[in-house]
Structure formats: structure tokens, C-alpha cells
Image (cartoon, rainbow, N blue to C red):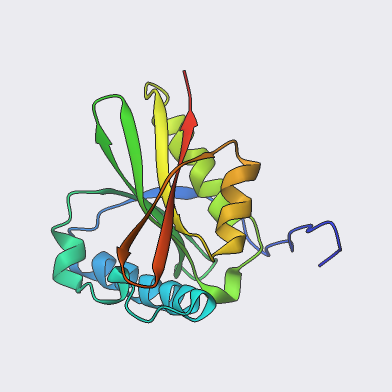
Length: 166
């Protein structure tokens, strides 16, 4: 990687697809990706009790979110995002990239896709751990601004970021 943060090229065409998380096989793929990604985040921020690491496949299947994902050339799920819409606001519930695929622009691609899919929304919200510097940099670079900071459990500080779309 160059000092300017240029993303490594991927050996396949990146396509974002809608995922049916109610399908058992898809939910299992999301669960696997979620655990791989959030274990890395837990280590990065020093908090082993992240809620996504406690979620089950059944929890994913019943969550009521809309999922989009990116698969590699072999069909493996390597990145995903889920959102919920409430009125004119879209909330990113989870954004995850397989650790082997970090720093390749996949999270940026998924966020941009959600912006296009939710073009009628007035704003998009996303939450990140204050210590998750890569996520904080990504959100800032895409026009998200800090809205509030809170601590859902002792020792974990989260910041909600908002991007106004209209």
C-alpha cells in the first residue's frame, strides 16, 4: 500500500447484491463474516463483548434489516452492510469486511451503494467505536459528521455519525 492509502486491486469484478438474510445458508455466511470482522474490531478497540459477536444465525435471520453484500470470485461473502429505514432516516446497523479484504475500498463501496439505494432519505446514520480509527476516517471522508457520543456498556465509547443527504 502506498503512503496515500491507495487500495489494492481486486482480481475480480466487485458487484454489490441484495442478500436474503432469511435464507439459512445466507444467514450462516453473514454470521461467519460478522464474527471474523467484529473479532478484529474487538481486538482493535479492546472490547471483547461487542454485541455482533453474541448474535446467532437465528438472530440474523429475524433482525428485520436489509442486507447488501459483496462476494469474491468464488462466491464467498467478503463484505456486507445492513440498514433499517425509519421515516426519512436510514440507519446502518452493521458494516463488515472480512479481515483478509481490509483496505480495498469494500466498505466505501457498500456505503456508496446504500446512499444510492436510499436516495429518498434525508440522512444516514452510522455508529462506530471511538477507538476504531479506520472506521472513523472512512465515515469522515464520506461526509459523515459526529452527532453524539454514548457508552452502551462500561469501557465502550461509541459515536453516532450522520450524513445529511437533502
